[in-house]
Image 1 (tube, helix red, strand yellow):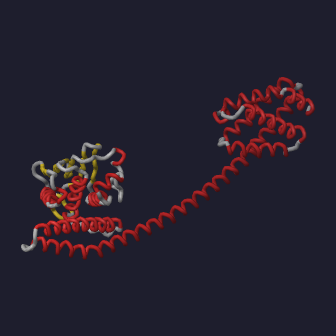
Image 2 (cartoon, helix red, strand yellow):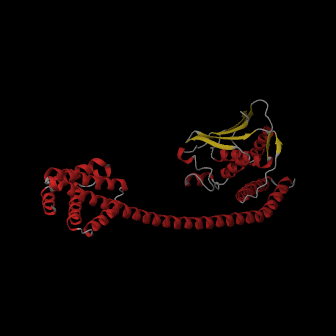
Image 3 (spheres, one colour):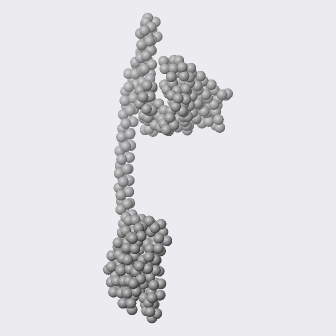
Length: 387
């Protein structure tokens, strides 16, 4: 019987392999992507290993074949179920050949041998495939864990460096404020003296204005450092926002940059009270105005409009300046971010004003947004909750 089975399966080899390949290509896309010659080679190897197992009781060729299939199919991303089904297809292809061509008295014994071989193959393959997958997952987990630890260390280092930077900025800012305050104060006294000539007073005004600009920059650095360090103190004052905006407008009009720029402010109806830090919110409105003036050509106007809607106060600051490209809009509130170099050289700036505005407004549970088109100006919209 064994000799007849051996001869039969070798004689019917081409038919078995053709039906085996067709069955594989039906069961999954994974097998359809494999070359047909490869599937035929796999089928031939499976047949040879099966004959050694069934006819001579030698499992070594089958074990080598299974090891090879485990590696190839695992590396190719096959699922366990797909390869298990491939073993079943091989058995289903061989069984009809035996039933049709083997002598009647040998059919049951031959079918039993095929089933025993298939079950052995599936059991061995499944165990080794799962072990390989588990080993690969452990390796991946080790790599991921190592990468995560590296990221944690890098993050800790970055946080420490950022904290040192904030401390440095705060210390430097405090040290610079004292001499600057003296320069601004003495220049103001000299401007007010009656015996000074006009040219000298004009130069003193430049010193005074530039000193105040530098002091604003230092205060912005200090404020951002305090916010980042969680050391910021926000006072809660009952504020008529209309008076706050009007005061910011009057202060900005005293600057040389405001010359030849019409600035208008309108408030719609009665304004409810807002609970906020009046000093810091005044700085926000002042910086918004200064930003609009900085990026506007002489003669271009700036308009402020104050309203309230659905429990929130809304301040719009509209200018006729250079505008902002769409791809830049989401980045202009980032620290130290500036527009392209040519605009920076022309209009100046340190990239911190809008960052400070966003942080302070968010501390008040508010929001700041911008709408703009190149050459058409920009509209900054600030909203804060009403009292």
